[in-house]
Image (cartoon, rainbow, N blue to C red):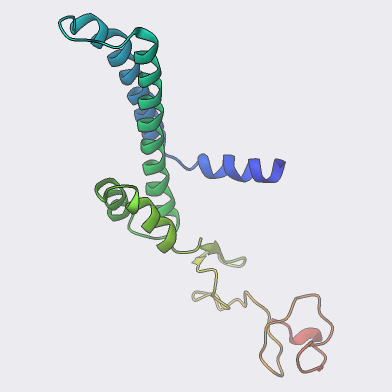
Length: 166
């Protein structure tokens, strides 16, 4: 539970502050509109009772704030994954019925990881750093298959791995 919660909190921390402020402002504007402006300025028409207006205001405010926060998350996550953040943000805004969000989460690139030696951002499926040549996934010198750094012998060909692990 703690691991899942801390991962969720870490993911939510990438939302830019401007997007979070915009979500709070949107929520407050919805509350003012449904609790102050509508009851005070629309007297000639049938207005629902105040508890219903409050409920509608809270629901609308939460929905719009969640959409803004999710859009901010897409913007920051696309930047962190080396994708075109502006393009994906515009797509999730303008593609209707949450299809833009669905497309983003299905098509996004995996996170880039830093090279342990030089710090260059690398795709998750790279076996060697493109800048310094550091081996990211050790391989058996005899058969070329991936092995763990703590293996003594290769589980595929049976040869001693020893210092051959890169």
